[in-house]
Length: 311
Figure 1 (cartoon, rainbow, N blue to C red):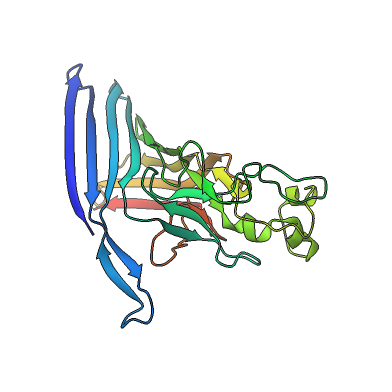
Figure 2: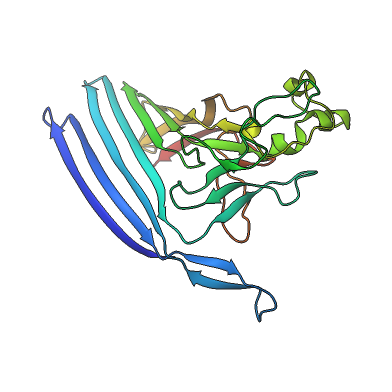
């Protein structure tokens, strides 16, 4: 909970007799006086207390949408809809430092990977820059074996999101294709941190193929570091629908439409985990986290076949 101050300015437009339309919106939203759950010094009547912090969390960005009718003939039509949004998140003011993003695994007691602090975006990663392995197979950290904010203010929240829908019709056939994409965010793989190391392989656990050839010592400590941080950009074929309207000469059925719909059919990403669209709850001290993957089950690929009948 908190207080909000929002500025919004936009413009809607339509040209070519309405065949091309769209909107551009700019916003600047400030969230102040966030209510935080603060651990109290013991002994105390309760282990925590609620407190309004002196905060100013800013979300500033622009949203753009464009709709166009490319073809509109009797037997053929094509409509395209595009939207994109850019958001810049920043904690401009905050009393204190608040850690979150608990990392689980053997030898990782008390580990975390995110810190909320003034001058950084929400859920910014606070980890060691990884420099590879030395001659003995131990991890090296060129900037010191200490956690720190990363250059470029890398965080879990995406900077750019977008979607593209194409709707086609040809006589009695209709096809709809929807792609969505997310860019500018990073994912911390707690799964890899906890299980995909040379120590896990030596202990007889299942690992990914790349672990087998790593020059890592079996007794190397897998500290929280950029070794397990990856870009979360992806483009997904979210929905594909094909339908056919049956020509009828019936006094009982006025309309019969057969369709097949697929969801989550293809994903284009460099993220090596099972699914880049992931967010395991890794809160710490009741402070939420974002963008952490820990043995998450991937989104299901589904196929639906059906019919719509109107009598």
